Length: 232
Image (cartoon, rainbow, N blue to C red; front, side):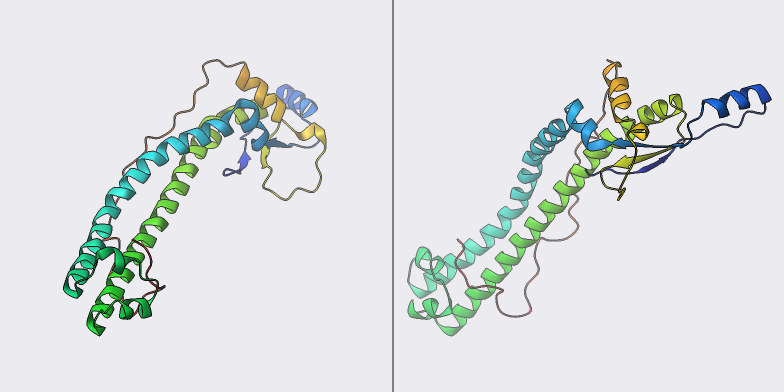
C-alpha cells in the first residue's frame, strides 16, 4: 500500500465536570485504533480503480515519451545512413552489426567505426534516460492517485469514525510493524460501513500534468559505448 500514516485524532478539552466524567467513563482503556488501508481499498474497489487510472494515464505519458524519443531515434538513423552511404553499403547491414569486428568486416574505415559507435552510444543513453523518466513519472503519478484516495478522501472518514468510537490515535496498516493487536482496536469494518452508507462520497484525482522537460534526453558520451551496437 502506497499510503500509510499515523493519524492523530484531536480530542477537545471539556471543562464541564459532568461531561468530562461521562467522556472518561465512555472512553476505551486503549485510545489507539488500527485501520487496514489495503482491506478498505479492496472492499471499496479502489485498488482496481487506481490501477485502471494509472494504466489510462500511462497512455498519455508514453505518448509524450515517444514524442521525445523520436528525434533521438531519427538522429541515430540519419547517422547510420550517412555512414552506410559513405561506405557504399546498406544501412540495414550497418545496423545489423553486433560488435566492432562486424563493422570492420563490412569495410568501414576506423573513423567510420568510431563515428557509428559514438552515435549508437548517444542513442542508447538517450533511450535509457527516457525509460528512466517514464518509470519515475508513472511512479509519481501512482503515488498522487493513491494519496487522493487514502489521504485526501479517506482521512476525514477515519477521523469521523475514530471520534465516534472515542479513539484519539489511528494507525494505518499493513505497513507499520505491529506484532499484535486485539480485534477490538480495529476500526476497518466501521470505516467501510461509513463509506458504504455515504453515497455522496467522492474521490477527486488531480489532473495528469504534462512532463516538464528540463534538458535534452541525452548528452554526448565521454568515451566508447556502454554495450555493443545491435539496436535499429
